[in-house]
Amino acid sequence: MARVPLRPLDGIDFDAVLGEIGDAVAKDFGKGKVASYIPALKRVSPKKLGIAVSTVDGKEYRYGDAREPFSIQSISKVLTLIVALHHEGEGLWKRVGREPSGNPYNSLVQLERENGIPRNPFINAGALVVTDSLLTHDKDAKENFLNLARTLSGNKKVKFDREVARSERDHGHRNAAIAHFLKSHGNLNCDVEEVLDLYFHQCALAMSCLDLSRAFLPLANQGNDMHAGGNLIDKRRVKRVNAVMLTCGVYDGVGNFAYRVGIPCKSGVGGGIVGVIPRALSICVWSPELDAIGNSYVGTRVLELFTSKTHLSVF
Ligand code: GLN
Image 1 (cartoon, helix red, strand yellow):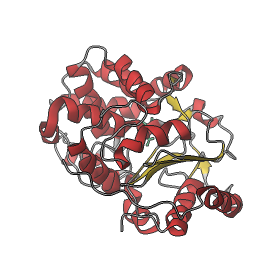
Image 2 (tube, rainbow, N blue to C red; image 1 turned 45 degrees about the vertical axis):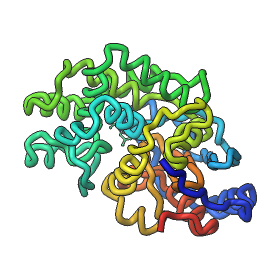
Image 3 (spheres, rainbow, N blue to C red; image 1 turned 90 degrees about the vertical axis):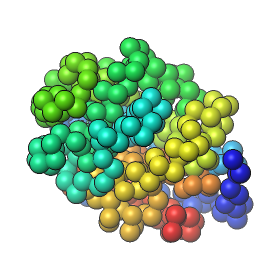
Image 4 (cartoon, rainbow, N blue to C red; image 1 turned 135 degrees about the vertical axis):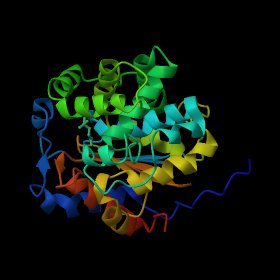
């Protein structure tokens, strides 16, 4: 397959850009709220800010708390989607759609109306179907998912935060309801408890901004994985996965987010957001205070400033 030319990045002083952005967002702390749906996340310091950028020409830039691990939460849904597409190919789309939901990520209402077929793989219902697919095809799915995160990030120390996983399980009644509902519609093959266990663990994966910008670099680099030295992500899937991120990656805030930021992104309620600029770079920002939809308040602002200052967006 022909390689599409990379975008020229030489003229951009990324260290200076990240520094300017860090100064500019200092006034935005205190406007959002740290996730409180589980006790283990409530304890995170609200004032954290980390940014990491990995470019397709092999450079990396960091700002602030970029090396501190945090709970990746829904960002894990991109990694599980990649694995499920590997297992099931296009057949996966019979079980889950790929349209924005326009509803909160943990809503049950739409699922009932649409007969147990979740709108997309990045709302909780869709992610549970995807997780079910991992377990259907691989009895060591949990361990292999952890290994994938380690390989893609080039960091063998990446691990599940057991306390967050336990807290997810102890307070995961809504996710349990969604999983049982999917099962009642015949859209889960595996045991509900097993699916929930893997889902809670994938959400509880602790990774830093640097780990995540490295892990997502293949999505900016036509599937090419510099850290693992191979092609863990099928080139043909890169366009698909990025498209689903652009249209479904930030819950029911996708329109406003695309308007402001203009790149495919995936957020998590731990306050992380990963973004992909095809043929240029991947970026991860972490700041735990969330807006009303569940996206990092400061993180969204950081990405908006980043694409504006560098003139790098997909548009
Ligand atoms: N663990 C969270 C949940 O299942 C993940 C949601 C998120 O990051 N949007 O509710």
